[in-house]
Image 1 (cartoon, rainbow, N blue to C red):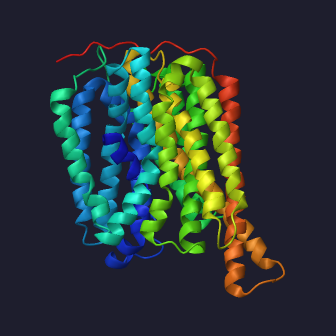
Image 2 (cartoon, rainbow, N blue to C red):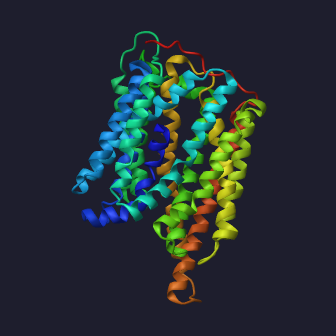
Image 3 (cartoon, one colour):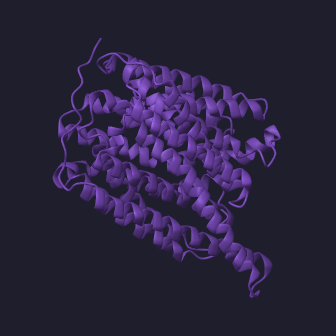
Length: 465
């Protein structure tokens, strides 16, 4: 429940945003902060959040994250103006940065037997992968039949029910030994990730030819470089470099970054295609993503036995290859038609492929991890997905604008409205090809970095009351 809530909140506001903008009189230049504030806080605070989870107690951090997320959602839902809405979204992201690694690390330390652990990660992968599409569906339903505010209010009962269920069910666990907080590392990685995500958000809004975009990206890279230098020298690093330098774990995390970039970019342009070209209303557009969600859920849940049978590498590679095929299928889209012959099979293929990838990802990224590193390793998975969610739409949107503008500059052969719709599809095709390329890079990373054989499960951690 907690994982689904955190993931769907990335996309649930998208469909509701036009209504919130009109209600709160938010300017066109500022409206993107309803999405960006969440991503900035979430992505920037994940690594410190993961370390807090390990040493403060995983159950305690999980409960605090749930209660905080519920309160932040209420603040955003009651917002009388843009500033309150953006503040609520940023607070949601901050508590999600605590909640996400706590949820995944609790699964990792609770299920240590390989077969049961594969099933648990299958459920987690299904919710993690389908959350974005579920958010679009929920956003369409709530916006069309209730109010955009309920896209935020809905989190409060979900979080409180999850917290009440967790109290008698979960066991407390934490890393052994003494730990000193790496304040310099926390400051560097948080500001560095915020600068990178902010830079890509700026690129998506204002383009790649602005000084603000490159200054933020350059500042982010310098800060992250400084973070690596600090982590190599301090006695108690926020992110022990052994976590990312492990061959399997590093490859799995890089593949996750590339997969997330392609997936979020694809969903962005599919949303526009359904609503602008095909004329779908918010609810219809959200429901149109249902086959994508079902594909992920079916693949991630029914494919759990395959993790131990064929190993994470083969499963991740096969799933990524199917996702590449599904994304390329979208290039067959036409200006005003194409859901049944093109979008539907493409969604099913891509969903099945991504479900297999998300199912095997935690098994590869958390296998053989040191007990004291479980929380930060879990946070790294969410970090790659959040940063990928910022990078992908920015990169693909740039290609979309260039392709559609070039199309409109050519000789006219249709009425203005029809020509505009054709230009949109021409841009979408360029974005789909770029998304498929990102997925293909992930496929290469999986083949060249991950080892064929399955590795040992995460080391069991003694629960402390």
